[in-house]
Length: 82
Image (cartoon, rainbow, N blue to C red):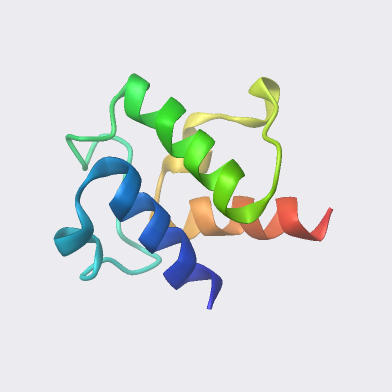
């Protein structure tokens, strides 16, 4: 399931694997997960690109992408469908 894959990458990139297991699609990210700062966002994007074989352009990224685990998963789903 894509949500589980996104959670795995998220947990590894932010080094919060134990906490990420309890997250669901509605779990807030930006502003709610202290580890998700501006540098971590860049690392997470790189990890997602590598894991899913996608390329993310700078203008595709906005705060809404990282609002929740679900919004991030939807973003990846759209990238994979493109």
